[in-house]
Length: 321
Image (cartoon, rainbow, N blue to C red; front, side, top):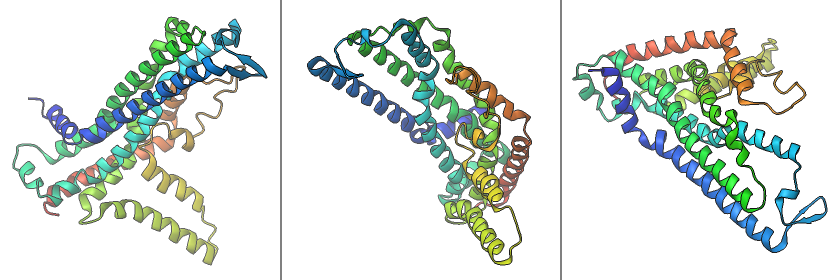
């Protein structure tokens, strides 16, 4: 029997609300909002027309010439998946944060850890299954829901635009339209490595804290940063406090947000420098993979792996809340 597979499934079923229903509900709200907005726009247009450059327009086919329409179709094909998945991945980041924070604390709090320890499952397998759910399972589930949401939004945009007189179904003939979900999936390995220090820190606190793990996980680095600012201001040590806030507090608590590596590294500084300022998904994937060549990522990986190892050791000896 594949123990790890069933342990990951257990984590999914126990936290299905955060990993599945939360992004699914957000995706449904997005689709509903786009549908309602499009319907209201069509009703308003049919009655009053739309003012574009001082001209009353009732047929959208006259708004764009062939070149402009081709650019719109290209932009939609390149960006629909990221547009639909972006809010869902933010929801996922929140779910992953609180999942990791309670992963080992909750089982001690309700004493279910005694039951799980009675089974022939090692502490390492248990902790690693939780980390895999956070780093791999959650992004894959969110990507699947985001892809479905994106396809629904794409279909609605094309249908409502056609009703308004603008044919955007050419987007279905673009290879970028079909490659977009796979390009997002190609960034998941980068996310796995980049998010490791936050996941490791939260799980370490979850395994160690006797009470109020949120205050310990967030309060310790924030309070340390405040004290550094205070001492630096009083004694004029000349410390680079901004570095601490960015690379210790920010990186330690916020690395579970997908794509945040662009804020901590310079791999994306040349995006959009060409003649076309629109940044395609393939460019974002390439820039994301360049993060693997930075020291920041691998230092974080080492620290995250060390903290997960410490969480495994703590779980072995800490049975009660």
